[in-house]
Image (cartoon, rainbow, N blue to C red; front, side):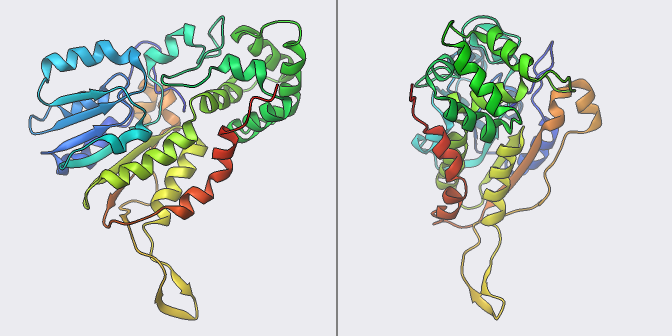
Length: 330
């Protein structure tokens, strides 16, 4: 997940596009799976016929929640849970489930968390309801496992030398955020448009917060609680997320034949109606206002049938979930 931020103000990405997609469904309950700064929720609640159930694993959103509880007491409900646990929600009138997989401004600028390479001090990176910190990963993971995290979650070209250097340095001192940045900069000496630490920090955030399992289970459980005709909307910010969401919608929105020689024998059911095959991306105007939005992609689909087991979907990305389950070997 990358930050959906501007240095001065938080902007909910692709807000107008989202509204145009969901507004025909107004008059029911919408689930905002990634409440954050509340941008989507506030916009949806502008229509008095709507209700919102918002989820967030991060308790730092509580002040924003408190304000909405005062202004929309009967129309707004908040749950401090991971969105993979969306199946705990009981509601008969859910119209849409919305995921914005970016980080909010408040989260990135809270330097005590160590989410940003601009932070100082202890490596944390927890978004809430976690089992371990980034410090645990850097301090205890074997070189081989660090390599896998950096390679598969960050697509980091220098994953091997960076993981080797981390293991070497930690023998003599505790690695803090600034030390990790120094290690990366010492190996990736060539400057680029992106900060040299971006991929390593991305991969560590994903691992610490188990973001792959969260997304896969969140999508499946969103499907399970939606009635037929309901909508799933997802805004992603990097290629791994988008690859997962694209496959999820595409694989189950097509009817395939068992063989080209048996064109009439259908082997699967169509579970989604995919209106647009290509993702919706921010306009040039939005990117000017909020540059980090340039990597955002919005995909959506309507549920048209029940009963999908998603075995193929889970199998397709099992290798990524296996990396999330790597042991602390050291």
